[in-house]
Image 1 (cartoon, rainbow, N blue to C red):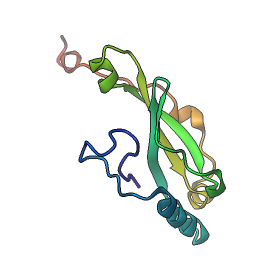
Image 2 (cartoon, rainbow, N blue to C red; image 1 turned 90 degrees about the vertical axis):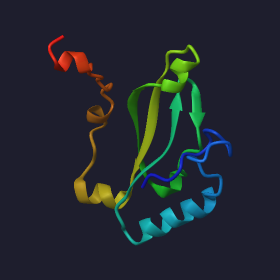
Image 3 (cartoon, rainbow, N blue to C red; image 1 turned 135 degrees about the horizontal axis):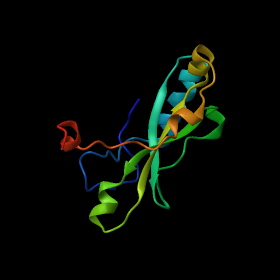
Length: 121
């Protein structure tokens, strides 16, 4: 699941929804857990020392993984040099199906390739 980001732009940006009710959303995640439905959720994150959105409640028993998705474009535009970290949550039912996830494989910094490098320049 990749619901609209929370806490990034308030109501000024149409890419982000202000109507997604956090408590109702997490109540539905509890129902998915009760039905043992597997899911992956991307919902919050951080750039530098600024966090965006509330983390998922601990009683959902989700495994939280932060993925370094690279340098923040917005921070770059503001003259800063920060990486963005996206939060991904794995449900208990998914972990039961696939086994535990080794976080070392998910925290390797992304690599950006130059178009010129592909052409031998």
